[in-house]
Length: 199
Ligand code: GAR
Image (cartoon, rainbow, N blue to C red; front, side, top):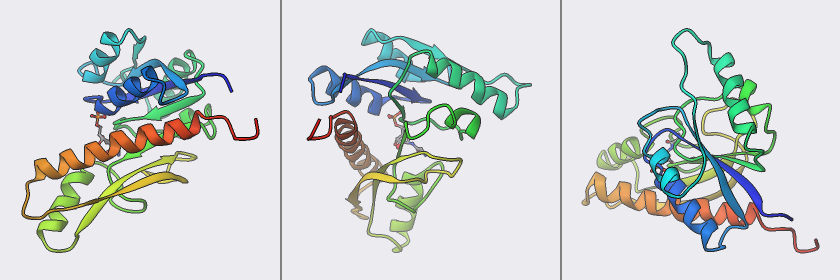
């Protein structure tokens, strides 16, 4: 198996992008981040990519553009990097099949909650609120394939449980979630980019 070509899509800070770039650089992942695509000009992930010498593409949605046209344009930008894997790492926009159809079994999403729980935005804050109400003692993170337009849903590639210390703070809980994400995303990508034992 050749080194795998990874495109990371970001909307914000890009701390998970950073973890993946570092893991590729030290050989923990048998691949390279060959491109970073963002939908927001202020996504700090673009700065991280620039600093790492990785090509970036900013694809913002035009005000008069419908979702499907945008997704088709986005797919073109991602496809130009010829990815083996497309990683949604803090990509905060729902994707239609006009995008996903270009990369079957190749789109991987990271979500800060356990499988089947808390889809959508603000999952960390919602888990914290449930813990404060005595309704939850743990949450977690997951990485899954994105076969269709389901939100934070699809075949699970890995997950980690994160206990919630309700006497702590939202900030310490969020940090624990992000630490778990960085580890899990690298672990899953390392597996995806490793040739099967008999090859
Ligand atoms: C991460 O917590 C990721 O799981 C979440 O956005 C954050 C991005 O952090 N994604 C979702 O909530 C998707 N539904 P980062 O920009 O520092 O990597």
